[in-house]
Length: 162
Image (cartoon, rainbow, N blue to C red; front, side, top):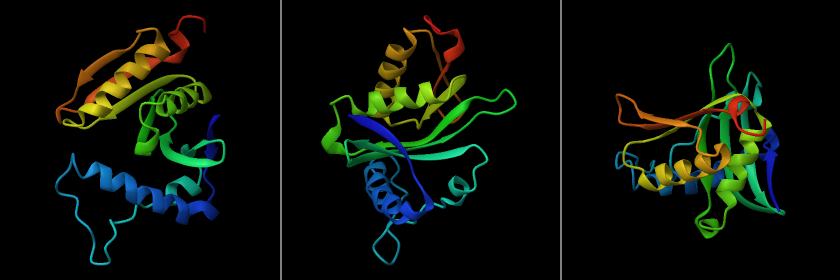
């Protein structure tokens, strides 16, 4: 069973450990990322996730096994919800884990959504297009911004069967 589990401040070290894997995977799309002198990638500042204010960090788990994470910001005052970072361990790729986890996240936070992918991350672009198309019954829009990021937008309030 695939679950989203809210990350607590007590789990910060575990989250930082898995973020190292995420950053490593991301280096194939951003060659400017380098290891620090201590042999680790620069850690993310996670403080905003512990303070509330509409920022959420979730572990993606299969039963009790850690399978990834999702960071999101809730939309407010008409702005959309945004997935800031999303990662599924490679061993779970192609098994529906990312699709189910992301769609659970969409259901947890109804309303408008924007999902961004950097210019050359074609696997992420394909994943999000397919996942959002399935979730929205193909009622989403896609555009590119000035940084050539792919952006999918949809509103759960306008979905069929809602």
